[in-house]
Image (cartoon, rainbow, N blue to C red; front, side, top):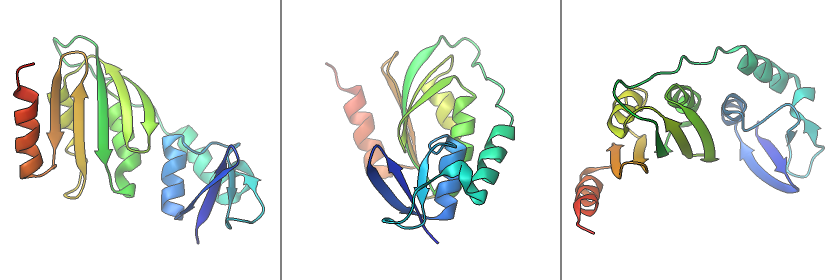
Length: 166
């Protein structure tokens, strides 16, 4: 089975039930979101469909993560870009939110404001990532970057670019 989502008149999908559950967990689908099993089918609020109401209830019951503070780190602004397998997206977002206030920009991009460093974020978040997942963290406040699993060539190119004198 697949699902479609309608946002401001535009239809997105098809998505698998696993993807839809992850969207609910991430807060990208709310009780009022318009969903349908068919692109041109009848649209309903997610809360009116039993499968979604269960997921919505489960996401409300989940405890919020305890905030983590990196000793000696001042609050900074980070851009986090990740290519994730759908089955770890919710766990990744939960772990990320433990380090500060997050704002999703796209499905794979977040802004984070918190008292930590790009290296700490990379080290902690990399424990969640699989071998096909990729991560880039940019510390916009301190002109630093950290990354994981981007490949040897990308690793070298990022190091060279980041170290160039302005």
